[in-house]
Length: 150
Image 1 (cartoon, one colour):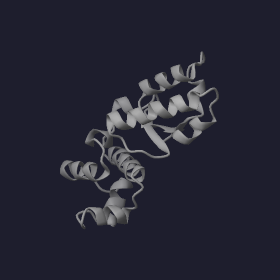
Image 2 (tube, helix red, strand yellow):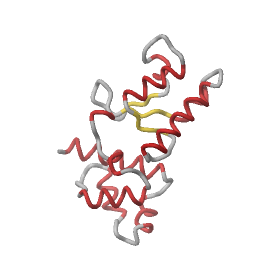
Image 3 (cartoon, one colour):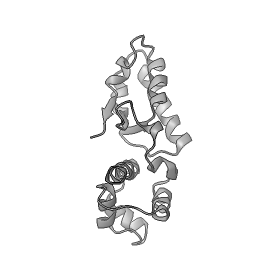
Image 4 (spheres, rainbow, N blue to C red):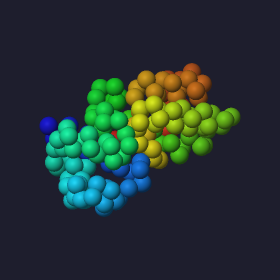
């Protein structure tokens, strides 16, 4: 159960940061419904969040509630979450960086995921990113874009 809480907490943190909100900003936006200290405990995985409160946070962060829940489609072969560093796409050549950025923006819109300097992606997204970058070596081009969650 602790691992699940850690994963939910990380997704909550990504969603909050994607909205450029501090813990205190969320407390204020929720009119005190969520205290900053409780939000921090959720994000650190120290407290479980109820389904109703998770749904309410999804509304505040303007994301789909499912994006806040861990699942097998959001993990790599090691079972760790996959985050893409959106800013590192700028270093790609031949306009490929722009393609990668457009694809990640589309993911944000379709999945109502939070926007930020990193983006949680699925394994299938990495395959598409490889195709956009046009690499024959599986995993090689996206390797510099991917951060592993600790």
